[in-house]
Image 1 (cartoon, chains in turn orange, yellow):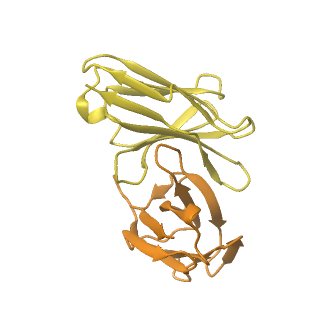
Image 2: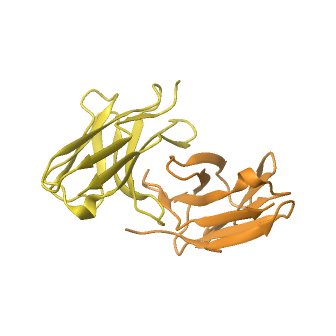
Amino acid sequence: GQQLNQSPQSMFIQEGEDVSMNCTSSSIFNTWLWYKQDPGEGPVLLIALYKAGELTSNGRLTAQFGITRKDSFLNISASIPSDVGIYFCAGLTSGTYKYIFGTGTRLKVLA
Amino acid sequence: DTGVSQNPRHKITKRGQNVTFRCDPISEHNRLYWYRQTLGQGPEFLTYFQNEAQLEKSRLLSDRFSAERPKGSFSTLEIQRTEQGDSAMYLCASSDRNTGELFFGEGSRLTVL
């Protein structure tokens, strides 16, 4: 099935560092969602974005809706060990309610 | 607990058997989704319902798969004559009619031996 491209695929960072990841598509989206998934669990919604250029924060997380509407970005500031997990983006195009998910960014934090 | 509920959480079955998963969405959500996730991949769309109507199905959903949402509340996903390639996590989600935010359940992990 169709999936969005996420970058990087995985990353190791030191505790306290900031993290950036992105999600890109060849299609224009009108909604972006960001999720975190722990092993064996369902994805948990972190942030929702609805307008091009929108910047939204949730605690140490900040996400942006790219102005081209073909990408989105997630930043995590001052990472902590519980940030470990897989982060997924999901996008929605107009005319459908079918969300397409990214391939995921696996985050590992070194204490 | 008012979140999305799925059961069973784990199912081990032999090839050729039929399995059924159930999903109870968040009560005020009118859209319900089924996704499949294999190891190392993101969730892949299978189908979604708006109330009791099944509005879209993926080509991934072969003839052996059927989903229902008879009264617009809970949904079932049945897989007939299971194959080893059906082994995956089956995720259910429901969405808020106003924001479109998608909320997932804990998933049902299927292992076909």
